[in-house]
Image (cartoon, rainbow, N blue to C red):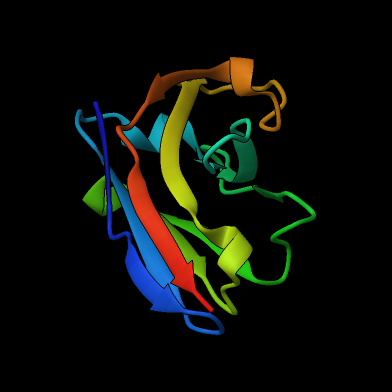
Length: 123
């Protein structure tokens, strides 16, 4: 089970960190990803971190967003800097299967999804 939290209202140019806490004892063997969905748009891949710590980013957020994980806390994070109004969306975390070796950019590879946390960036 995944629980995303940390969303909120922030001004353009500001920063926010969203978190995703996972239940269970084997968090370290699962790759984690972050997605977002804005009203009227499709769900969009943002970033992922593999079970071994390899990171992947969408071009739209590369250099502004940073994904990380703390296995001791069963938590993945997405640090978002230089936020823009177009970053406004519901942000979801997701997990792939254990020791996943497929593409982290593929939404179909994710087995488990959190409930989402809303991020609003005002101009």
